[in-house]
Length: 150
Picture 1 (cartoon, rainbow, N blue to C red):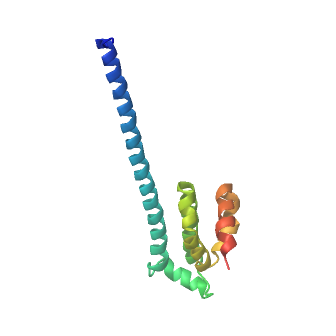
Picture 2 (cartoon, rainbow, N blue to C red):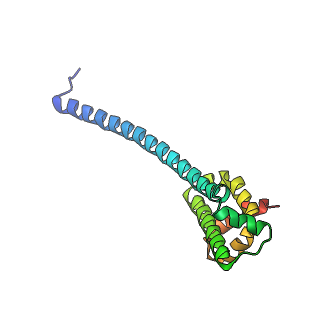
Picture 3 (spheres, rainbow, N blue to C red):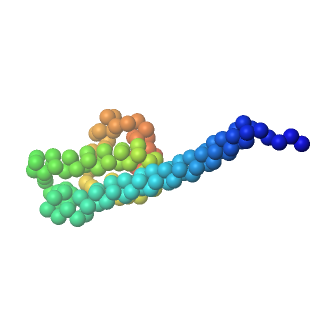
């Protein structure tokens, strides 16, 4: 039986090193993917929390305008502009959520339905602006959100 020479031994060790490096790289990629998914979930939560904060706990701000509109009281032009700015912010946030993570947006569909149902004239606001929205986002809203509205 022939003994391997030095160059063969070095080649074998180098190949083992390459294989170990590939295994380590795969492990690092998996950790990175887990971290990115966690960050995406955190972003989705923060976007929902910001909308909830503005709608439900922002006394003296948007909440008063939403309640005034819900009760059928007439809004001043300034109040209407503030409410429309908020509606636009919410719609852009929903679109960002959709583009950021489709599965996360689907998981947030009940929240989105709640917003559509509780912000006065939000559906009408959306209908007026949907031609300027991303067509894939519009399709998502129509199929996943608007179809669930009462």
